[in-house]
Amino acid sequence: MNYVFTISDKDLKKFITYYQKIEENSEDLKIKHRFKTDDFSITVYNSNKVMFQGTRGYNEYKKWADIFGIETLPNEEELPIIDYDNQYYNLRVIGSDEVGTGDFFGPVVVCSAYVTPQDYTFLDTLNIKDSKRINDREIRVIGEKLISQISYHILVLKNEKFNELTSQGYNMNKIKAYLHNHAIKKLVDKHSDYQKIILDKFCSESNYFNYLSGETVVKNIDFLTQAESIHQAVAVAAIIARYKFLLAFDELSKEIGIVLPKGAGPGVDAIAKVIALKHGEEVFNKIAKVNFKNFEKIKKN
Ligand code: MN
Image (cartoon, rainbow, N blue to C red; front, top):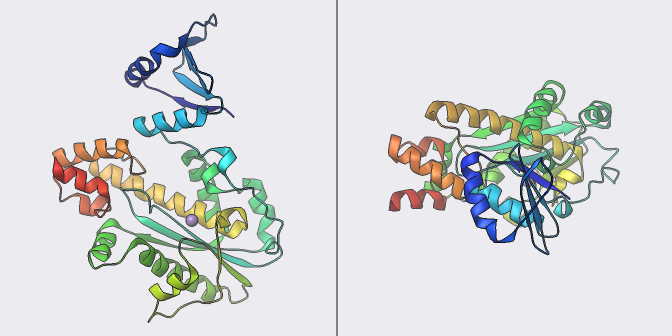
């Protein structure tokens, strides 16, 4: 498996300094640099494309992508096998998934989607798969198409509200449980002919219902891990959630005048520092999850 990203000239300098001891000569005119060990090889092309190969290729790729704030796809070998041909295949299913819980910037987005076997022909044209295998650009295209054809309910929990809830002692899983229950309830009311509800599992079943004590709760949910690979309703919910997350992220970036990075790694800290200098700490309540460690790091400086 090859992993590739494109690097800026500035980042490239740092990159080649790091690997200079293992540089090899290359006769190929398209190649700028080539680095090689027993475990991995890295090729830097004239176009500034960097290709990682070998058994440790993914590790090196991931390490630098995090440092440079480059969007990565997960290691194909670690992703679950998709098998939609299972006991759920012939059923009308409500699937639910969320996004944004690992991102310092931006909202938490939960989506429930309703998919029946009649939707399969349409979904096949979009090649629906685990959203982790799809990059942001494709998510925007597929997401746009899905929302015009598939019945769904979306909840976007803005940062201000999220921060208010966590300051009241809500943890992330309790927040997720509330949002999922609410979105699922909406679809259950709308599609009373549904046969199964599948939730991409994020906590134990008993915790889920404990978080929701006192609420009107939808029961009879199948809590499945890696549910995106098990039924397309969950895959669709995940894609729509990520699509709406990207749109919300665009809005925040525009408001703040900086392209916000995803995740919670060093690239995020770097941008957070710039924002703190420019706008002060107060602005983070509106654009970020202030219970993340990233926020403590800003305050220390
Ligand atoms: Mn999930």
